[in-house]
Length: 303
Image (cartoon, rainbow, N blue to C red; front, side):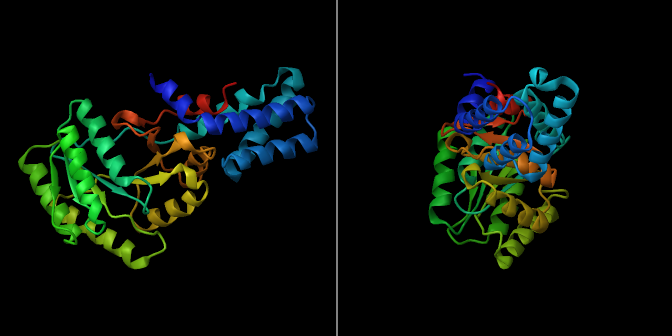
């Protein structure tokens, strides 16, 4: 299955709900009226595209109607164009340091799929010819260390781990030491899930990043926030708070294949200006895909 097909399949729920609504609005009201514009607005907000993006799409539809009339205006292609334009801002490729290991810190609230994402990202980087190490810095959830070790065995990727309830910062320190001595291209750090509202846990994450930077200046080079697409716009609050605590460099959106709220990707990117680097579209090791704005917007709106 190609990239676009994966996007299409993964976004099926979001796509069918959105396209069904837009078709209904356009069919009922081929002319642009106040009521049809309100309905269009409501449908886009219901798909979690957010107020800013919705306003941008509605304004573009109005302009198209004024210049081309109702017969020449395709609401779907206007919406697709605006979303693609918005999502194309920012560098979506993962950074790679010119020398030494590139350290990637994976952060997020509990239950978003951080540990699985860590492993899938390692698999993707390894399949591109990189040498990768994993650091199990979620030392509070007993199963997290075992889970990462199992993935490591399955993918033949070394995992640096400490004991359960060990200091996460010392595990990260050991991880960087190992990545330096083994000339690894990437070290991916799986951090503990933490509620964005818990100040002490956010401070602990800041400490973890400070220790990394002491051991390797500039580390972590990437801080990726993992968001669960099924939480819809609640993910925006998580992104805001994490970004305040530890400057994020990008987002990974998981569980896109099980939600009708896929539009939240657009809303979050629009508000925070953070690039979406990867999306999770299933359970398999190769189901984490590099984000592609054009394919995403096509999968969202194409009839």
